[in-house]
Length: 580
Image (cartoon, rainbow, N blue to C red):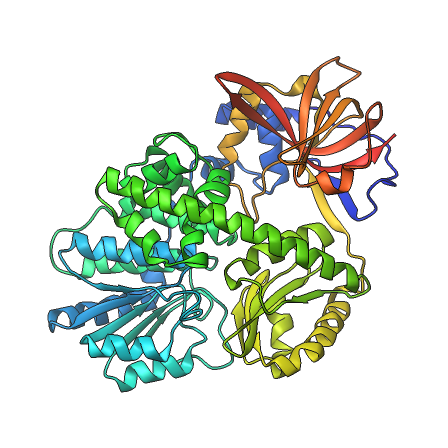
């Protein structure tokens, strides 16, 4: 792996700030560690420069077994919640789980439903409809569950911002166990027990909602009577929800997701097997975080965003493969509809964004936009304009929507400082949902840009790309690319390695995918190796610009492409850093 970098003035892409990181360890030290771990020095070097400097740290990272999880007793609220639920069950009380309509919420509900079924306990699952009910808890649902005789309510992936609804549940005679992972406000809701890593000291601070639900199930597993379930069988749902929710892949999440990916690859659950088939994968194909995030997750999300999330819940719990295939095909159709809706709104939002070129952040609004895809559209716009972005529509007399942010700006904290303009909000540092009265829109627009400017400057903001090494095309091989997969799962705090290319000559350039994407045929003049590169979603930017005959220096991730049985190496281009 090459270790010298070319001289670059970055005049082609001034919005990108890149840095090439290099390990401080000597080649001899890296070689010794690599030999002990039975990996290549190149992979060992990447681990070292990502902070794993000892043999023990590298061993954990490559093989993060469940034994590395801290004891359940280190999170006292888990046992409190388990004791309350067990006592309620012993008293013959009915139990309900209230989830959310996204992947995290649906997998959380499926996990607890599956767990209780293993114990011979039938529970009620309640998932709100995106359009009819909105996000999270609602009064009508509380009244309905109370009318059905529910005495114990477990929330998953929601509840921390729903004070009045939880108060009403308590008034109706319910015990409430609130499990969530979203940031709390200044006052906690009056639940009997709160299981949220954001609220109390917790050995697993970065969990998704499904992670909190998993640890509750683990505590219940040893508290409820009867044989204990093999709790590891739930990790496929944990991996699916955790990856889709884009939470940091810290120590605990790495353990959960790495082991869960093994189950997702095996496709033991009929619903997962069928979902993989509907996504164009084999039911037992080995998959990583990328296939979960870009193939499986969107199809589950499509149910909740455009229709009824209970369809996705039914799929995950389905025991019959043929029935699962029918449901998965329905979700695939919804996902295709979601893509079309998303593209239409994205084009309209992009045109609006061009009217606010001087704003530090983007607030885009149309009363007719479908609320189910606004978060995805916001993500795409942040990618394109590299500014924090809120995408809004009108629902039931209010303006509601979703936001996404960029590195350095905490979106949730930004909304906290603007709460006087809002009727409600919640979320994370990089993603949030919000609602406001229509007359407050322009004040919010002004305040949003002001808060961003005060935090990270007025812009234009530079996206930073961290490059793991300078890597020529002659150094790419199927064996090396296979070895890179040992770093899975990729995601926040553990990105897929990005490499810096030497100057590569463009032999040909073309558009594909309805002109959305750009394909380059590239040659490394130094080694003579030729490979194809793909620059996703850049067709609009390069449609009128030919780089044929030019030399490009790229930030790229290599991948293996299989088409009609033929295996080849492809460069997935992250950015063009220099043109000469």
